[in-house]
Every structure is written in structure tokens, then in C-alpha cells.
Image (cartoon, rainbow, N blue to C red):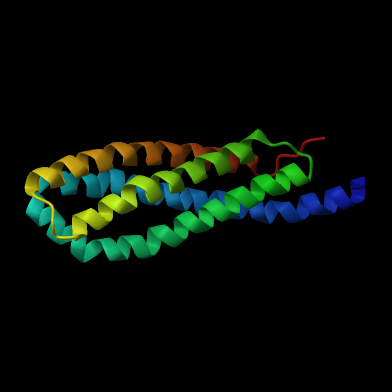
Length: 162
């Protein structure tokens, strides 16, 4: 790719970098809200009450968080691929993509299966408490990955490599 073409392609990459940072930031913000508001509430109520609350409200949370997670993953991976194509080799965009994919991986393999068990109606109170503890430990990791992804995506905005 010639210098002029690379410069034009780099200019068109900037909106993708911004989109990645915004979506990853919103995803991380949603996960932090769950961490500091909902998780303490869930742990403070009896398990049966938690299951009732979760069954009634989880679909609304999922309706927001699943598309946000998918969009953040697509945008961050696309931004990293674009950086690689432009030979900018931005470790920040690669870090953002890897951390965002990590959030999605934990969500798909741990959080979503647990969410379905919470709403399935077959858990005892003890099983609910144990599963919520496991869910929370993995959610802590998602929050850390989300914050790392946000910082990296923001750092990648406008970085130009020779």
C-alpha cells in the first residue's frame, strides 16, 4: 500500500477506533454497574427472592448487554484487524480486542449458563448461593477485562505508527 493510500485508510480507521472505544466503554460500564449495584443486592436477599427477581429482570439486562457485548467485540476486533492491515501494529488495539473477546468468552461459557440455571426453577437455596458465588467470581474477571479493554481502546484512538 502506498503512503497516500495508507494515510487515507488510516483516516477512515479513526471512526472504527472511536466506535470500539465507545462500545467497549459502555460494556464495561454496564458490567461495573452490575458489580457495584446489582451483585450486592442479589447477595443480600434470600436465594428464593433472588431467583424470583432474576427471572423477572434478567431478560431486560440481557436485551441490553448481549448486543452491546457482541457489538463491542466486533468493533474491537475490526479495529485491531484494521490496525494490522495498515501495518500500525498497535498493541493497544490488539489488547482491547483480546480483552473484549475474553469478556465474551466468559459470558458465553460461564455467565449465560448460570443465568439459565437461575431462571430454570430447579435450584435449591444452597445451590443458588453457591452458583451466585461462582458467577460473581467470574464476573469480577469480566469487569477487569472490560476496564482493560476500555483503557486500551481509548489509548488506540488516533495512534499512528510509522
